[in-house]
Length: 282
Image (cartoon, rainbow, N blue to C red; front, side):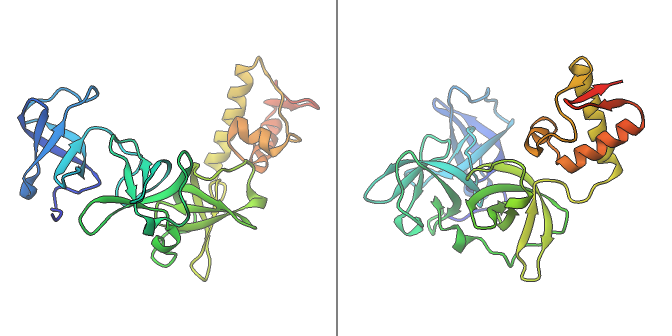
């Protein structure tokens, strides 16, 4: 069964309700015909002619089906998923839908263990069935991206290396976060907002968890955050320019350098006093 230009298997689609029956509703799948939406306790009220947002997949019989449940990953995406079962035909991952996501032995980079989590990418097999793979090194390419320096991206932490952490950028390719630039611990499977720090001559990507560059607007925003925090705490805060970077990041989500610069500006404006134990509002 092929895909049409209107309905995408493995993706969220907005489809029209054409008929309501005892088990749920039939949705208009265009050239692919009707698609069954089985109603659950979480399904919103169904009205013929109205549109509904659903995830489309192939059921156990190979027929198109729809659900209002949201999977942890859609087609082409990578997610940190728990191994639900391992059988003699392959493994199964919990991806948030009643039917677990199948992962063939050929697509397992290492032996799966029930209860453990793995990074897996969702793809369509030759029969248009949604399937998973942990062979990310074969599925992700460093040569097909078009990112720009400073661009804001989504990161999924992949693994620890000698230099830092490999991270998956927008489900497309790998980049590297360097240990000496990190001010917070990272774990495999975590999602973070990140930034393209530099695209090297070999097309490899250096990453940062902080915005690249530092403009006046960001500087002013940090200063205002410091003032707001002081007002919330009766004019005093147990943080100053000598505090550990981790403590500063935990409260304000910025680097120690950015925090110190903002404190300096507030001090020059005579809005704060920087004391041995912390900062006090004037």
